[in-house]
Length: 126
Image (cartoon, rainbow, N blue to C red; front, side):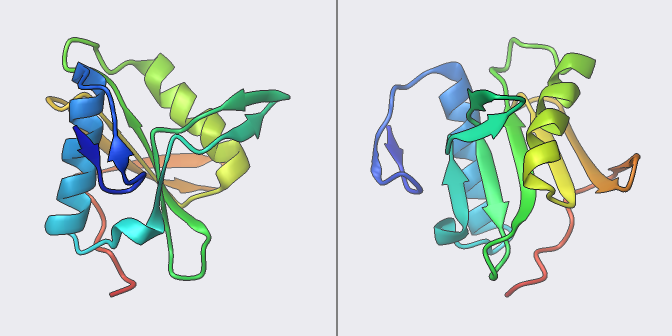
């Protein structure tokens, strides 16, 4: 399967299908350019290298949304939210999005708060 962000073929796994569906949705339905997305780009979290599934950047290059994808058979749990939140301690994006392709959770991150939203926020950088 072709990844339009990394511009290469990637293994066709259940989690990768979810990740590619999210990338297509963000691009096709939300108008977010794939050039402002990074996929599995290494960051250092508490001294260890981690790779967030997708990070959407604003037009200035700052992280706007951290996205964590799981395979459809994996239940979204507090552990999944913690994983995305740990990435965001480094990235400091205002939004988190967690999905397994079946369940989806989006939240706005404030100073010491996480407010869950009913839908993805509008892309304000068109």
